[in-house]
Image (tube, helix red, strand yellow):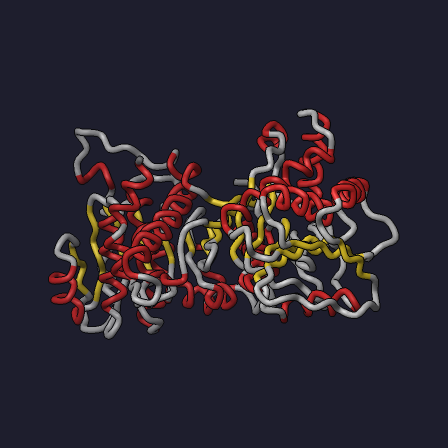
Amino acid sequence: MKILRVEQIRAADNFTIQNEPIASIHLMERAAQRMSDWILLNHRLEEPLLLVAGPGNNGGDAFAMARQLHKAGFLNLQVWYLKISPAASADCAMNRMYLIEQNKVPITEIASGDPLPEIADGTVVIDGMFGSGLSRGITAYWASLVEHLNQSASRIIAVDIPSGLFADGEQAESGAVVNADVTLTLQFPKLSFMFAENERFVGRWQVLDIGLHQGFIEQVETPYRFLEANMVQSILKKRKRFSHKGTFGHAFLVAGSYQKTGAAVLAAKACLRSGVGLLTVHVPQAAYSIMQTAVPEAMLCIDETEMNYCESATLKNYNVLGIGPGIGKKSSMQVAFEKLIKNAVSPLVADADALNILAEHPEWLSHLPKNSLLTPHPGEFDRLTHKHHSEYERLLSQIDFARKHQLIVILKGAYTRIASPEGQVYFNSTGNPGMATAGSGDVLTGILLGLLAQSYEPMEAALLGVYLHGLAGDLAASERGYEALIASDIIANLGAAFLSLSK
């Protein structure tokens, strides 16, 4: 699913109006009806509704919804009309007139400086004050009204976008924002929904298809996409009957150190569960018996000393390299790491301490094969680049970093995002808060390594691997809940994740 900027969404509306063709007032009616239908499915008819309408098109949606919801059986509803500007948009004014003519829903007009009306307990508030075209923060009297709504005990449903939130990412330094419980966004998610600092404003969001013209949607260019099942199903390869283990590659995983063998175990198990043909894991001698017992399917390359890296290991027998989980940052490992990446000839996977080593030696980034996969969390990414003050700022840095170094950067989080060397960004739709647990990143490293070994193109491996990782986590959470979920549960559900995609 594409993520469009405000001006592109406006263009999509206009294209639909001209080429469906459909009058703008009827397109608004259709959008309002989709939101009204959602409310009908998720709320009881006896619940009191308060629709707060501004003078723009979001207000027009709210007026249309009030009429539709009353007709559907919601009898305890009212509208506040905010006189923010002297004139309303044409479609807002028309829908307001329709509601006045119906004469069944009370409308209270509120002007700047008026006492703030009370909100009855149990009221569901529908926020149609300001839309996605907002260009400055909400201040003064209207900010106090927003805070009045936020401080009420009401459940708040935002029309398209919470009032005060900027759709395209960078938020105003000052200004009030509605804290919605649910955002019913029209046709496309907004870029700002993808950032952690906006979760308290957006709440849970739902995309509602309002039938914008498919011709426009297909041809419009955007660097941002929301990664969904249909996008990765086409990537998944079908196995041929006469395949053998050599068909699916031989991966070399450098992982683990004294007291961190668990990272090697998790990454190795995930790699094997992702379909790799053969896996060799480099571990220190201290991890030998643990690995042989915990992961009998993997071959081992054992360190020559008790703690340090085995420099005799070469890459000639392996078609892909993964390095980082639990390796530590000892000087011997740093020397070995530099040699490894200099000798690597195909895209590799780097995670955890491999990224921390790169942060200390940024000049080594040029040694990484093009299209290698880096999987930092925000802290690791900031160490690779610089401290960021917002997720939007970090997104721009991620795009710049991927382009500059010709790498695929997978920034882990609630909507793990994948930036390509060409500047494309995919936000992942799978995953849940239960995956915020030790070892989850090691599992992702193993999945990506396993897919690369099977000759998936690096970007294909990134998209498929991230989606599968989150999907397996979702399946695990459906059984265990969030709190009890551990990284091993993600591995245990990888098979079900593959089956779900293959269907």
